[in-house]
Figure (cartoon, rainbow, N blue to C red):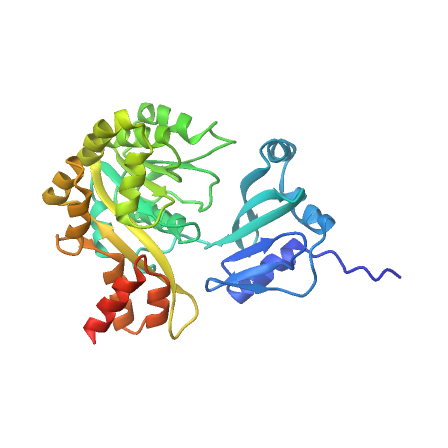
Amino acid sequence: MSNEPKPMNLEELLQLMVKRGASDLHLAVGSPPTFRIDGRLTPVSKDLLRPQDTQMMLEPLLNDMQKMNLLKNKEFDTAYSVRGLSRFRISIFFQRGTLGASIRIMPPRPLTLDELGLPGQLKKTLALNSGLIIVAGPSGSGKTTTLASMIDFINEHRSCLIISIEEPIEFLHRNKQSIICQREVGPDTNSILSALQSALRQAPDVVVVSDLRDEHIIDECISIANAGVLVMANLRTSGVFPAINHIIDSFPEDKRDKTRALLTACLQGVFSQTLVAKAKARGRIVAMEYVIPSPKLKRCLREADMLNFEKLIDKEPDTKSQAAALRDLCNKKVITREEAIANAYNPIELERIIDRAY
C-alpha cells in the first residue's frame, strides 16, 4: 500500500471554508491549504500540497480556451459556483513553475449598504444622475462587495440601465427596478477598455467598472462621467488623497492639468475603505474614509492645491478621514485600540487623536 497522502479535494476544502467562515483559501505547492479567517492566515492541515495536488484541483475548473490563456499569460481569473454552497472568485497563477491559486468566497447575494455599515453619504451619491464615484482600498478590503451593494441599491430604488464591466463576474445580479447588463472580460468583451469605448452607444444610465487599472480606462471613465452618465469604479489604492493623486499621476505630465480639470468637473465622491477585526465578535468591519467634494475642495483639486485639500478633510461637510472613522469605531468599542492603530494610514496621528478623546 502507498503511504502517499490522499490528494486533497477542492470541493471539500470549499465546504470547510464556508463552515469555518473563511474569506479566502490559498493554495501553493510546498504549503498546506490555508484559510484567511478574520484577516489571519490559518493552515487547514499539516499536509503540504504537491504539484499534482494543485493541478488536479485547478485544471478541471478551466475550459480549453481558459487553459490556453493561463499558459500564455501565466495567470487567469475566473468565477466558480458550487450548487447549494456559494460562488467563488478564483485567481489561478504559476509560482515556481507550479499552479497556485487564491480563492475568495462571494456572499450568495449582495449585502445591503446598511448591513455593511457604510455611511449615509454613499447613498446620497447613488441618487445622482451623472459623475464619477470611486471606491478605493487595498486588495482584500471589500471593494467588490461594496460596489455590488451600490449596484443593488440603485437596482432597488431606481429605474436605470446599468452596464457593469467585470473581470470576472463575481456577484450575479437579478433585475429589480433596473436592467443590469453584466459584461465579463473574455466571454462578453475583449477588455475593460473596449467595453467602455462602446458603452455610450448602449445608452446606459450607470456604468460600473471593476478596476481603474490604467490611464486609458481612467480617461474613458472620466469622459463617460462628463457625458452625463453615473460611473462607479474600483481603484486599488489606500486613502482618498492617494486615490486622487493616483488618478492624476496615471497620465503623462503634459496631460495632467487637463485631466485635473475634467476630474474636478465630474467627481462626486471618493470612498476609501479598510477592513478591521471586530473586538468582541468574529468578522471584520469597514472603516471608511470619504470625501464628497464641496466647492472649496473642488477649487483645491482644480488648482492642484492638494495640501489644503487634505487639510480640509474632517472640516468640510460630507468628509471623514480614516483616523476619524477608526476613532469612532474604537470609541464605540467595536474595535480595539490596538487594531485601530495597526490599520491606520498614520498610526502616530491616530494614537494622538484617540488619547485626546480620553
